[in-house]
Image 1 (tube, rainbow, N blue to C red):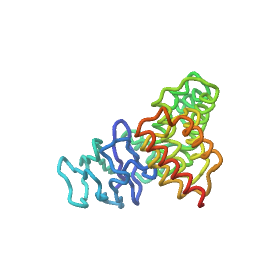
Image 2: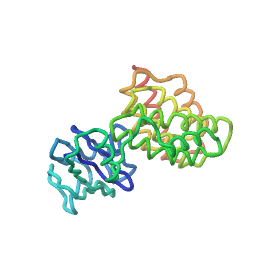
Image 3: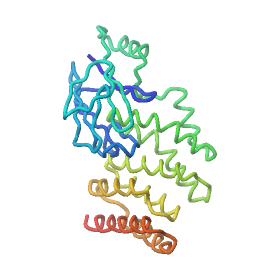
Image 4: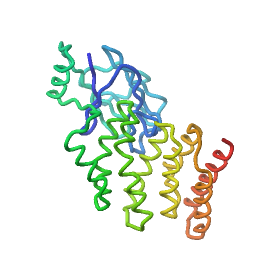
Length: 276
């Protein structure tokens, strides 16, 4: 009995195994919500059942409005609340076994999967990502596709979807083109998430390059993620990280206590990277 998880306007296929939900970039479903813990809950998916487990989160997990003790088996239509995010489990019953008929049935029920061959709309979004004037809009468009790929445990597909627009945004910043702070931070969040899921230190370098150009500390949430990721990736550009710290130290007089604390935490990243 296949299952999917409905969250906002997306339907995520749940394959047999574990499906992690939280704020961390390592989660299959990463939620940008301050009420959600880094690793908040686990969905354990079997062929005929799904169980949700609270991973000792700060705010707990609610099923149909009731806080669970630890684990609870879910039924079709159960509403799961994690932080302020509500999602619904949907069981899809079908006797269809032919792959072509199965795909057609999934399309009729509205289940969304990430296709290796992009649709016309997806190709248009990818082309738009190449246009500097459309970078911000393209990031918003492609983020939904990337989220699907992450949820399906396919970070390499997410990387293919995002790399053009993320690198294009960085080039635009380097050329002095204005970028809204929220787009800046969103690009950095996806950079950290790609580093965590692909194991590539170059995406950590990407985040460092972004904030070097901005001449400001990374937000606290991104610094937290970098501390977790930097221990797992093979190597990063230590010289670039040190250059970033030099820029931050030049700006120290402009910072308040919170920003100075962030600089200290970024200095901690240098110490970790130097030991690797």
